[in-house]
Image (tube, rainbow, N blue to C red):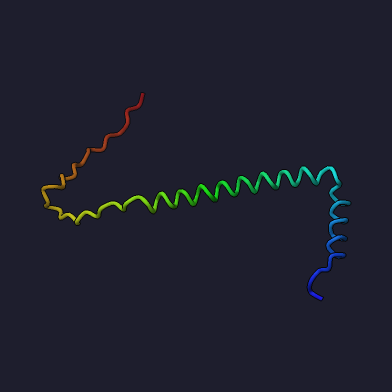
Length: 86
């Protein structure tokens, strides 16, 4: 009872053809095909990007630095100046 028989599918197809017309259906199918091709190419590109990211080595972790460490230059404060009016 839950499955549709071939007669049900034929009636559904006939209603779709009547509603949308035989001229609009090929255009709709063409547009759907283009959309699926674009979607497929984007998914493929995302998979390639993921593969490239996995192939790149992770950046090396640097040890934490202390404030008095000579390798770290001291931060210089820059005096704040107001912009001049023209």
